[in-house]
Image (cartoon, rainbow, N blue to C red; front, side):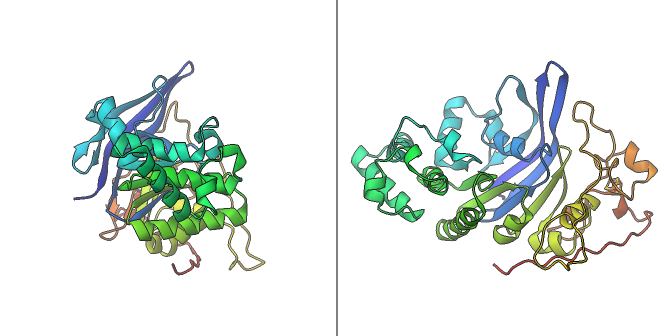
Length: 338
Ligand code: SF4
């Protein structure tokens, strides 16, 4: 049994302009100890999916309309708020894009780590303090015994993100959700944070869901990838399958638009022309049909079924149909060995 299984999840936001169908039937699984990256452009539904797992969709205007999120066999969508409070922090931790807005500016970093430990693990304040020092050391904060008394504004951007990771991992969660954890940081610090997450994942055997639009980060850290577009998962596979043998035209476009060091000078980055679908009135067929170079009549009329390319590789595209024309493309991506 998977550690986490999302079944047919639908999430909408009700606004004055109408209903935004942000997530439209997402199915995903996460195994124990694995790192799954969810990639896609802004508005594809990846962050909303992560927030739904934590039941952090602001309501109103948001609403989880239907579906199941099974964690260790229990449906998180059926838990009471009190039960969900236990899950958040102690069993599933989350780190956000901007640590400055996620950390409490009026509390020392140490107190913020200790708070979760005292609430969830019911340990004494002195034990919690000791554990908070250990956590700060684990995430690479120098002189943790004194730094524990600092406020977030006394930390640099990279250190704040490390502190967020310490808070999220303090109670040994089974899953860590990292939503664009490096976007707000400069490039060298980004690399350090990804290195740290990789190291901690190995050390603690925590399963990680990494939400990102950065394919470089995916290649560095994940074992499996889910590609989202227009509120749906359009392709899933191992990192090797998605980078070397992608099957969905959107994934081809995503890879072609990725800056790479191995790119020949004459080869240009190719942005995907057009814009994402209108989720107020989503297309009834394939969400990528308006931008896809291979669109057929059926693409506009019917959403393609999920086709199984291998045990680990699934794609939702009419090109997989036995009667579809065969098309060729050349994804040339080199990924560094982990
Ligand atoms: Fe393109 Fe059709 Fe495949 Fe959608 S289903 S990605 S429009 S070929």
